[in-house]
View (cartoon, rainbow, N blue to C red):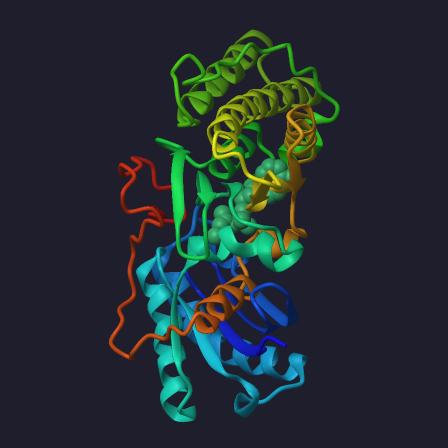
Amino acid sequence: MKKTFTILGIESSCDDTAAAVVSGTPEQAEVLSSVVYGQFELHSDFGGVVPEIAARAHAEKIDICVEEALANAGVTLSNVDAIAVTSGPGLIGGVLSGVMCAKGIAVASNKPLLSINHLAGHALTPRLTDGIAFPYLMLLVSGGHCQFLIAHSEERFERIGGTIDDAPGEAFDKTARLLGLSQPGGPNVEKAAKEGDPKRFPLPRPLLDREGCDMSFSGLKTALLRSRDAVITEKEGLTKQDQADLAASFQAAIRDIIVEKTRRALGRYLELDPKLPCLAVAGGVAANMEIREALTSLCESVAVRFIAPPLKLCTDNAAMIAYAGLAKFASGQTDDLGFSARPRWPLDASAPALLGSGKKGAKA
Ligand code: KG4
Ligand code: ZN
């Protein structure tokens, strides 16, 4: 029987302070606990995450979070085989809080340390939740990330496209602000869109005329602003129906961009002739039912399995970091105390740098 490991994971790269305990093997692992302290209220007045506020909040919460994760899992540090921590990419002050906490625990408990790339955590999540085989195609869509990755192994990820400006979650959040809806924008725009006519405002689908899998969302926001202002000038205000129609038109544009680019990414991926072809999504935008349903039918049409892990494992969490740590530890690797926190850390260093960074800091 394969040896099992128990790993403590720590995550603090953006605006969620998180700790988790995962146990098992890379093929079959179980989340024993996963604690997440969000910072939504702390940043809500500023229209984005404020790095200094985030870093302070992480520093205040991180040890409480670790204690809770251990207690909820019913383990103590002595039962843990190693400590995995996000060491980038992300907002540097936050990443540092997690890294310093992990190093302190590692020294005090004499346990091995594992330095983990946050994006690898997201990208390996479908292995944790569904045990899927390599290679699979991954679409990360959130407020901070937007990229297509082919996961070839636990250590090799090929980036075949991504946003060149805003992340889609960021576009949803800005749209909510323009329409006077509250934050986080995604769920509120989706709700408003349910009552709206997606065809009323012909918004652009940027980059669809260009080959490849790169995406662009910033022009959409400007187009939406113009459509909104035209209505306001004409009627001296926005009715509920105008708001719903604008939300629906925006959501349809985002869906079309993501679906068409995913179709192309699937084409590239299927050239590898995978035995069990699979597309997995992660990130808050994967919660959007309109986008999820469109991706489900796209996958059905090309006989590819579609996986959307439970939302709490799609958004930022430490279970994914603990799992990525487990896979690394099981392959015999550990890191020494000297590793640094990294604001930028592309998963695929050979791919050209993406221009966009997203409101939550540089991710690629
Ligand atoms: O993954 P996440 O929790 O955090 C990071 O950005 O890392 O994603 C949050 C983003 C926000 O921009 C939010 O508006 C968006 O995901 N989001 C959605 C929905 N739920 C959350 N976007 C569209 N539709 C949704 N239902
Ligand atoms: Zn993330």
